[in-house]
Image (tube, rainbow, N blue to C red):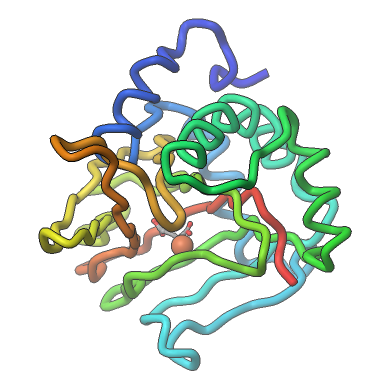
Length: 233
Ligand SMILES: O=C(O)CCC(=O)C(=O)O
Ligand SMILES: [Fe+2]
């Protein structure tokens, strides 16, 4: 199994970062060799359910492909290994936000819920950005059922494979809007808020609306894999 699920990762620190910023970096989830193997999948014709050219939809510039089921085994394992770490945090956030939905302990039970509601299409995806490409700020909502956290993994090495192309998160509350740039190296993953997150302040819990995107790639090529836990209608 990958280092991701090993006991030595500090999941309490991940939870604290998610509570403080709405995102947390997991360093070295993938080895460089795993990154190269995954990035090489992009140019293959098989294994995908669709390809999206972002400019055609006003999503930015660049392209991505949604994997078909069965997912590549490494991504299937990671999606299943990450979900149970994140479900307790998601459930606490739901309670803090005053929302009724709770998430089961395991991914299979959650996916059954999605599939029964007609959200049957797999959402894990691989993205490819070249010079001048970017990803507009967005939220990955694909139907009624939404798991509140998702993961993106950087397959390319900043400075060597590309420049620019930073992962950006914005946060909007009644007090204004702010942005964070999340520093990632090849093989790192970022866990982040899909939609809204709670933040405790002096007057109780505030609701923060989060979006994510990618700044313009200035040179080279940047690949990422996104792991979204809900499936799409
Ligand atoms: O390319 C990235 O870093 C972000 C990709 C993305 O929007 C996602 O994984 O949901
Ligand atoms: Fe996204």
